[in-house]
Image (cartoon, rainbow, N blue to C red; front, side):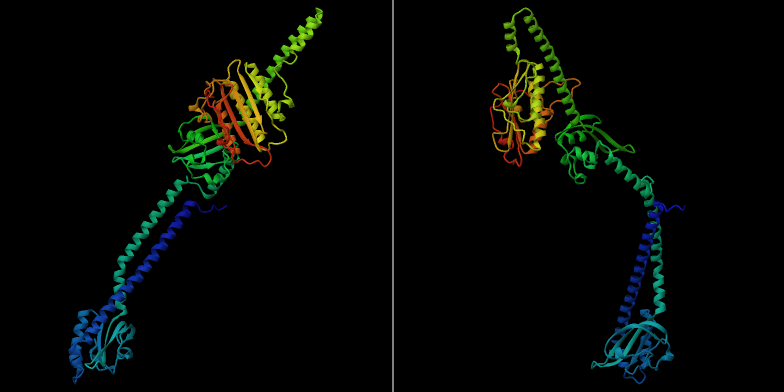
Amino acid sequence: MVRSMTLGMQLLLLQLAIVLVTVVGTGLTAMWLQEQQLRDAYQDRMIAVAQSVAGLPVITSAFDDDDPARTIQPVAEVVREASDVTYVVVSDDAGIRYSHPNPDRIGEKVSTDPAIPLSGKIYVGTQTGTLGESWRVKVPIFDDDGEVMGQVSVGILESELRADFLGSLTLLLVALVVAAIIGVIGATWIARLIRRRIYGLEPEEIRAMLETREAMLHGIREGLVAVDDTGRVVLVNDAAARLLDLDDPEAVLGRAVDDVLDPELARFIASGEERESPVLSGERVLLVHRDRVRVDGREIGSIAILRDRTELETTLRELAGAQSLADGLRAQSHEFSNKLHVVSGLLELGHLDAALDFIERVGSGGALSTLDEHDGLADLEIAALVLAKRTRAQELGVTVELAADTHLDATVGGEPRTELVTIVANLLDNAIEACVLGGRIVLEVRDDLDPGVVVVRVDDDGPGVPPAQRAAIFEPDVTGKAPVPGKARRGIGLAIVQRIAHRLGGGARVDDSPLGGARFTVRLPWGEGESASGLGVSAIGSDATSGAVR
């Protein structure tokens, strides 16, 4: 099988063709211009010579002599030799020559038509005469009355013109040959340079590599964001576009990373550190690994590998809730066994009344107190969440209560229902961790205050949030809780709450709580066809302000 021409050879031949076409075209144009300039120069000279001869008094007065040639021939020859032209021929209005380079031609009629100069006009052109083909000029000779009395013909042989042209062409040809040689050398160097820049790859290999690269980058599950050394995005694969909620990944290419990515993620990518860290981007917790990209020992940018930890964090929270529920069931089982032993002992001792009193006193106890329709939470998901959080809080010595006027209809809510579960869970977790042993938390969820609005309010009796820190409490990494070794990153729960609320058209804020701690209030659009207008932070009712950093 015959191998096709290599890319380097194609580039070389293409550039050589361009160089040669340019040089030849330039040379032909230059030669044509030079020939025209040469002819124009001779034409100007011949017109000047002819007009000067036609205006000489000695010439015009000689026309009245018996032998005009005796006077005119010597003058014409002197002018011819001085002006370096082939001939200067003077003739009368009948075309009879009075001068000629060949004296034998004097007295003969001119060999070309003298009609144009005899009409009073100047003729310029190429004609063939007794001396051969020549480039000539013919001008009229006027008498004292302004009548044409003859003509002066001045010319130079075409062979002499060509000789002059070829004599001046040598330098031009040398310049063209030198330019062609330089062009060939430059084309060869450029072809080799381009070959090195593409690492000696052929077009088929480049296409195969690009197709493979695109398939790999857009097929892997991890997100990839590449940034050049100027801080501009050069690559975003499909997984990264999904994780970063980018509708059009192509639109962000070439833009500054600070303009298209979440500020925290942009700062991490631009930090220059090769490390891995959880980063909050939008409402997702991403595990981001940043590496520098080097080519031939030169750093050309950085690449960030994104992994979604949101689902993992959710699973861990659910697992923790299930563990808490299991621990609660185990504790309740042990407690219930003890109560049975007490009842059994009282019955064996015959104290029936005491047994009945004990049953009435402890019958409504237990860690898993039920939630029913009288609690106002008709939504099963929220009710189950509150039960799990109540169990966990009870183990920590904290009481979780539902406000008496709580009301949440299970038949409305639409898309925000899932986000509402996330918001309630984060607010309760935040409040439980803020309270100390014996603390109290009150949860209020209401969808009956304003049409199309649900309000979540969580009060606690913890230390609260100082007024100076309330603007920053919803920012990532802002927390008053001490870091726990082996635990996930702190200070992102409230940030997620606020971002979800803002995305849905609502808002979140923190104020003083009647219980003495902090009150977190979130308002969201709720129900079918709800309007999000007026649900921003400014629309949330203000209470007094106080509390601890979460």
